[in-house]
Image (cartoon, rainbow, N blue to C red; front, side, top):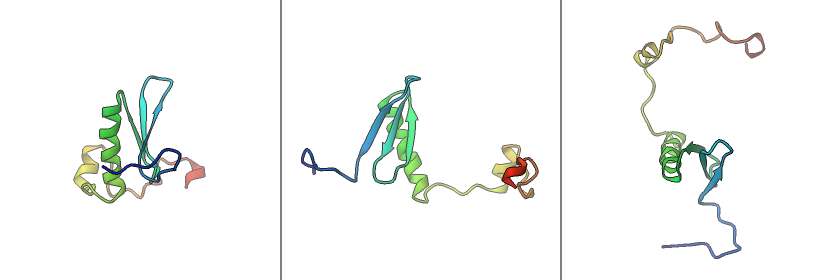
Length: 86
């Protein structure tokens, strides 16, 4: 197993942040991608999923998926946006 000697910064790794609400944030130090959970293990599982999506993994969202979420795939997206976002 490789490791970084103490005192030398590493670009790879995970930083854990204990939040005030009791949750734990896991942040990938190389990409900055982060996720959270109630435990370190859960935060790591969620981070692994977020990293997979960040790197292009996962399945694309289909029109049927959007309809199941109550969204109109034909909408241009401006209907419900505040004026400053249009």
